[in-house]
Length: 177
Length: 182
Image 1 (cartoon, rainbow over the protein chains, first blue to last red):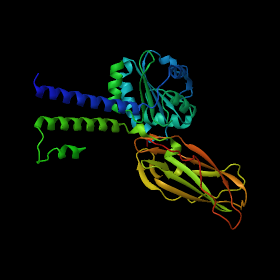
Image 2 (cartoon, rainbow over the protein chains, first blue to last red):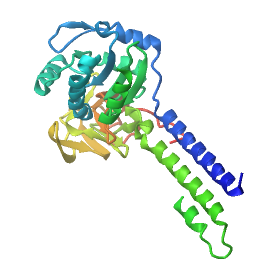
Image 3 (cartoon, one colour):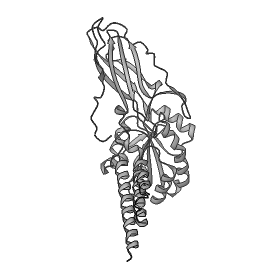
Image 4 (cartoon, each protein chain N blue to C red):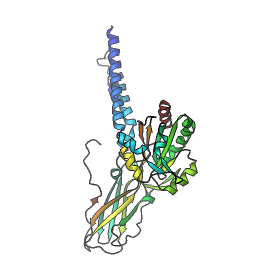
């Protein structure tokens, strides 16, 4: 092996090592907290009223790819990402994708907003108790929006504090469907 | 980091070109690695009580002063800011909240937001000379990176000075913590 090739190999190894270290650091810093199986079980066992006041059990959607979005009408970034969720529900709904909104809010405000934007997935109303649930799912800061993506078996595939970007959402969902 | 790469161009004793390439590649790789770590701004978000630090003091026997120190990159909504006493040992006059920065929000219309320090004078209905009061503040705000915190309720117990004395000491709702990493 020529010395120049060896050097290039060394360069490549160092570069890949540095990238891997950077990616690892970025990953470690972004993971706000792991969702325990108990937290997922608590989520699946929830029964909450939807915007119309009808009680809905979360486990009725078991077996689907679930995108559980904690949101509120008073949260501007939450509102910002919801049209994208509506679009994704429309595009992937019949392939087994189910969005579930959990509103940290008052029922009347949720009802009004759901009608205003034509929400095509359930908006469950939980009030402040939802913040504790979101914390157990990894939302350590208890801020919004917070989104948990679960695969068909109910394992957490991704958690996101802040807006879930459309391209990220699409790639996550496509990989799980 | 760019300065490391340019410093290798010294003409006094040129380094071999493949050594230069090695150094440049390492520099680029480290830069990319740093950038990928920095992309996730949410990793450095503060808990609400640290992003919006509430403190207060009694200016004199019939006036309190509340303060929010809003960390850079965060803001509070003016119309969500409210103060009261618990128990309501006297009335708290509707405070003259300072004007905030007017923001044309696509969802909420025209809203006023506070950044930096917000100081609010709170005149008491009667003198509470020598007594202790609990001042309660409700606030709600967001971070620029695109997350919002639920409304926070924080309490501070203040010793009101005697007539003609004051101001009292500043009391923090959450004592400042030493943080070695941020």
